[in-house]
Length: 252
Length: 296
Image (cartoon, rainbow over all chains, first blue to last red; front, side):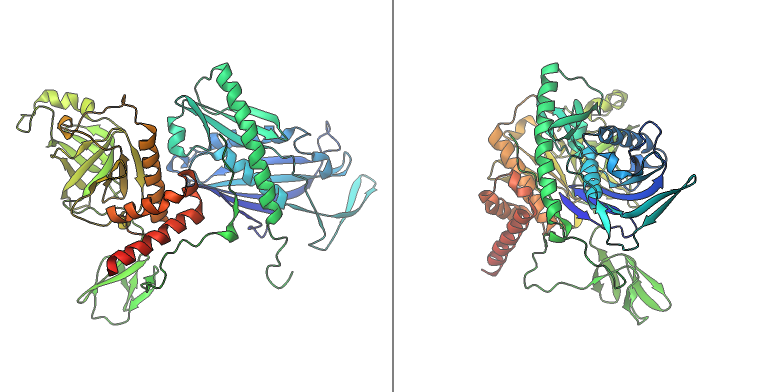
């Protein structure tokens, strides 16, 4: 598994992940928006998945759209819980202004285990995301005036320690395996995707047709939880090792 | 049984090159000028523009007298008569099967160029045409030999020998066709407890040793019930990872190199062989042993 962060210069945060033959590029951009009336003190997060036709010939035309929607929805579901990802830090002014994170996921190559790769890349990209510091906000009549710091380096990082990691568990024969290649995915009779954050499940979904026995399912879930915890630790460790803010070019 | 999770940063990528002190041939990139003179002839992978001869693919130069051609490093399989290939049936048609052999066009396997059960001199009846899907159906893997190359580059295959036919239990691996070394035989029974078919098209088939070839009449029997014992499966898995290691370092694949790699890999567990460092280590040690064997 190979990870690269901060590779898209124009994005606020980005990451590229290569897992065997799967290649995923994630870029995060941010916008200022009005928060939802139901959650006035929370920001927004949106996922958009694009399946490039280069990934597999199946994605040509509209072929990848269904899968893209599925991945985007499961990610949105996994990040929905406030315990998994705290959106309140994205609030600028209650009920008026908030940051909106737009997470763009580009699938460059598809070699199996897409959910896991995407979730890891998203987490790395969010870790890499820097939100400009807001110096002051004041209300002028009905208009909100913001003063954003001019310094590019003067920005805040997101807290992604609890962001969920997704793990696909496939049942092949009598055993359950994680991290299947695309050939192994074809052989699997059933598979479940679990999103785990801090040893707690946030989302569970079935990604292929096929039934699981309740005991097998419980074993699968247990295994998924363990694997996700390990994966999470490994990811955070490697993210700590990434060089902090290299100066690229001479203008910065 | 959980294994360690390996995540690495892209900047710590392992250099997979094993060319220690060997001279690396010049690699031309598409559009690069090969020669400025006009006296050379234009071969494959080249084109003429503004009186220059330029490369149209990325690869190394090959020159035969005045004919210059560029052989691409990576390409689809260009078949030659007599090549051993491993392929997958994609379609069953009238009197023929379509086979995916990693070439630009699907290859054909004619019903008349297979050995049907019941002897070589059997007449093919209309019934055989109806039975075609029972012999070979979509998704089946076969080994075959290239019988003919058509004008458009597509291949005609035949399996008129007992060694060719349907493949049953084993592992398929895909590497670049240019990495397979051409040799007298592409069927090897390795002493480590596995047989290997090195298809010239870059498809490699690893399977447990075929014990009695007498059973294998016609090559349409598939024994999927027989359970392959775990040591054999481990040997197959190790071989697969060794071949992947060699292929990653762009080393030629033939029986000796694979066997050397297998022996050098014994210090790692099968799963550890997927770590880039271990893969390069195996490739370097194999290259070293090949050099020694070559010089002695």
